[in-house]
Length: 112
Length: 115
Image 1: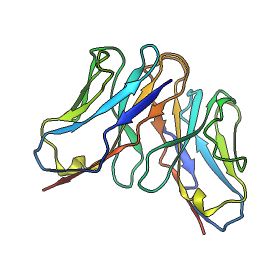
Image 2: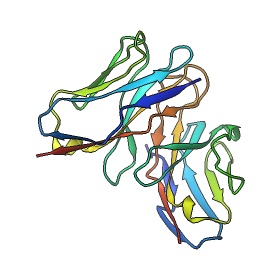
Image 3: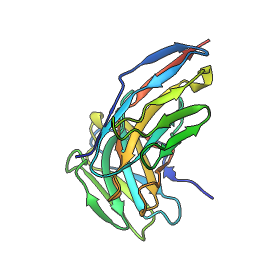
């Protein structure tokens, strides 16, 4: 079956710290992988995506690399800011069908 | 163009009443999804539509929940005889149907409070 396992939160970091949020997946075939972000009081929005193995998605200083050998799609940022405080969701879409599978979300708080 | 819209943005109702939540997807998006997000929790999949049909209703929590879609456009999620545990934000998303790289676009959600 298809599923996403995400690092438990909450995560609290100081400004300019390095961020990693782990995400691993189980899927048949070759899914596309996504990170969504939900800022306080707002809806979910796409942060980045990768559609095939070894692809790197990047946006707003965040990066994630599609690793098929480890079935992972870890989110990283070299220097977080207070404005990055949000909940981050890892998701996959199998290469057949229209269903999406989301992780449980990881809450990040960045303190000045 | 316009994004996914949902109405109402907030709904307060009394236990036992029925509620209808509406979603207008992005034009041309044939796949439409409903999720529930309880306070501080992740996304709980409810149902998705491909066109006007629902291939997967496995996430509907009980027979009090139903959803329909017409004209490959607007969708309505109906909760009958609401209970306090139904209080949550109900999120709608839409997507182009074909192509695994197509992401979901989310609406702002409807916050439902059952007193």
